[in-house]
Image 1: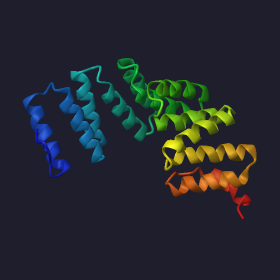
Image 2: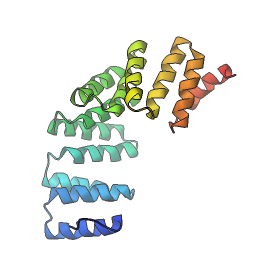
Image 3: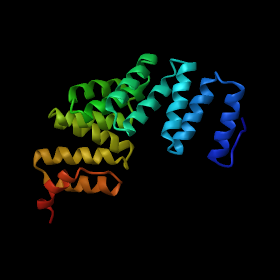
Image 4: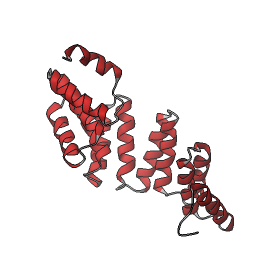
Length: 208
């Protein structure tokens, strides 16, 4: 393998050549999968990650990547299952716990989301995506003060982290503070967050 490449296609070609020389190298299969994902070749990437696991069945990152492909397809069950496998391979790996939390949150399973997000934050307290899911789960459970604290912690370290502003807006609306809700939701939009249209519609009458 070369130290640098002119483009991703050259890198992919080199990986494939290396795999022909050593078909059992899990790292090469995994790196090929990541490279194919960057080209949005989901089927090719999936095949590479499955090949990774055939050669190294405790390769936690490969399970996580397969979970991501499932999520892209809208397969929540598959996403959850692959991330559970990843966590079993490496219990202190925060990413699969954060991903499981996200799936539970999407299903409206706030308590399960909270448990998994806590696991992710146990192994990486600064994992901002896990913090956002944690804050969302707390909001769903009516723990507004705690949700706000988590979001403020995220913003203190990552001022451009849009999901935290959306969570703050939800908390503010729940408290009846429409001005604060509008301020935070507008900040989330400014930072590129895809805010729920129903939420924006609910706030619309309170805009000056």
